[in-house]
Image 1 (cartoon, rainbow, N blue to C red):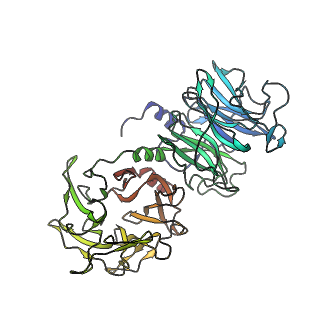
Image 2 (cartoon, one colour):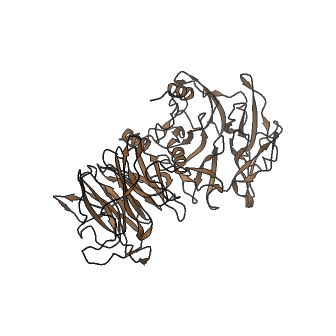
Image 3 (spheres, helix red, strand yellow):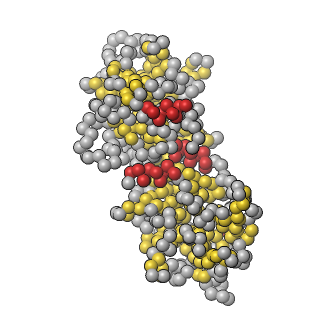
Length: 571
């Protein structure tokens, strides 16, 4: 292992979550900060040595300050500029030179607190405007009310600050709605705010946490009235923000997840929630919200990987489904499109691959989706070849229509030191139709695959257990409510986890993303979104890497280590 960067070392010894170490939230500073009263958004100084949090005080709230000493945090004390008014939502400038927060204090700093006015209803003393306080030596100056360019109404809250000073926050939008906005800072002045288009118009967005370089944003979203607010992440693209991706049930397990702020490393998320830690009693937290910390590394890394095709002997669009031998020194994959798809093979020589060559038995038919047995003794693949010599090519039926010559059945071919055997069609108990696709082979011979549903037209995942040398009748996998299409499984040899593609939420309309689920004594866990859009997943022999076809029709790679470690830790 290489040397940790200086800042990562600092985080490791001070009790922070190291990026990439976990995808399950843990309580931040239990006892000293979290666990004593309601606590909210956490804003850190750049060195990570001081944190400002909002805390309930009587009927209001104030900002408190805590300092790190070694691996421990001091008892929070009221910040020098807070305590008289209802203050909340601290946000630190990335360089630590100023802090923006929300307050009901009057714009002049004296007099009565401002009222909240919305929908013709006035709530005395509950107004919210943005204020700025500048660092002066080891202390703070006098808070200054941000200009009316930003504070356009009495419901302006949840600030987050980019490196260039651009300010993201929630403010009043059209029709008295509360909308995510961005006020650019240019030449020391905030420009007129612009609405930030994030998700569909019906979705409520709250509490943004903007990356310093504005490359991604974490928000709390409510998809329908009365539903809980859940954390989601979106990425900046040349065409605007991507569809917000839900961070999953492991993160959003409480009745709400809000107050997102990024830590000094830009990859650790802090938020507040009434969620419980795994194994914690239902009555363990009697004090309301606690602050939680979460590494965003799996989502950030997945997004980065999704933009770059993986290195390998596959170098053409439409190359797909790399099936590795157990030693990783040979790989079979499909090449071509439609009925022209064939299987190709390449071998590794040191750090390089030989040029891919057609597999001997894959010359005359549409062959695709190879899946290697974990011991390398055979391979299962899909083909439209006739079931019997002299027969006709298989036609398929899926997506609501017939596909001449595009049918699929599962075939098996033996592999030895002498090469490949003769392909044999799997029995009818598996090949129940001409639309069997995407095989995956477990160590005990059990076969996972997808099959088109005649009733609703959706693909579903099935497993045929291999017992006493025979495939048993396939059983549908219980991975959801059946409302979405699930396809293209990749299964661990011991069947401890499965990765598959689905168009279920949070997939965007017309898209599918990768999900992972783990086997338990009670069945599969709730599938969690891995992040990237993709199909035709395959696992590396060491299970550390997932290969899949991206939107650019090329093979991409995704590191599974953090997700597998998360499950091992929780188990």
